Image (spheres, rainbow, N blue to C red):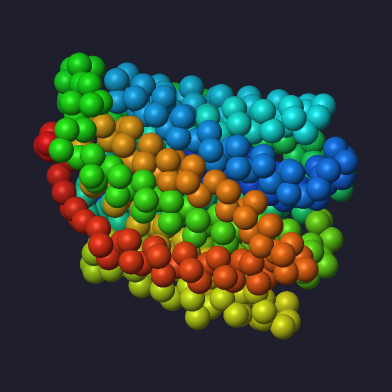
Length: 410
């Protein structure tokens, strides 16, 4: 089933829900990746080194579990739609405030608060979409939703390329406040999750500890799995632009640097859609394992291509595999989660995994500095090891492809 035919089978309201969830994750990622693109500029303005600025990435990732828990529980209790709107407004406000940082300390504090708001979006948006569509559409829509992440990265790179010389890094964060407009669309076009509405009285009474009875081992597994997934994605993306500047000696606003990042994100879009759709036929676990392992032979081309054309091909292919594996994650986690905590559990497990992997950029920077500033070596080693660990974790875990939602599994 193609993406277009699958989307055509959705009704009017379901399409709006999928689009809103996709845009929410796209704009969330756009706001996150802006900092990764201006690390050098921020460090220069505040008279510090690149490593100190990467703590902003660490704090954002570390704060996300708190946001996933807070907003996830609110979404399970009061509904996906209103909480999603509040969350989008908050992460847009904190993004705007970052533009007015007067010191590195203030910037780091605001990135932590941004991380709290960012932490709520993925889980709520994914549960809202997955609970609103037919089971046979989950794989394709999962890949589409997760493709919002590289789309956000692409938009951030585009904004950086077109605007940074004119408005500086502070101006980019002002642009990052635009996602707040999405709230108007959600309010007008997106209905509440039918699964949540059907069980709203039970959800209002549900206690998270009671709902999680018998599922704690699954929760622990999901956290470890998502740690590996986040180390995989952030390890291939967050320091890529710094690799361009330091190893390839490309200026931050150059067209060549933008083209490489664009190819990287195009690959991510293709991978998420293709492997997400493929998981409907071969299973969630098999699709994720194959994608993860296929990243390993691409590493030399990705980091050591030797020419810009080969580096571009490597950037494209590595993200086909990385985000190919990720494209299955939204539906996989939602299918594993009990109804009463679906607003909380997938996002909370995802963000706790993010917390465990939050030091990825900082560790990669440290590894590079131990080898004369060689980010290619550090990033290659990281992805090779994480790909193997991720494939093993997926192989050891469960799968619930096609499970019915609204059946109050316990």
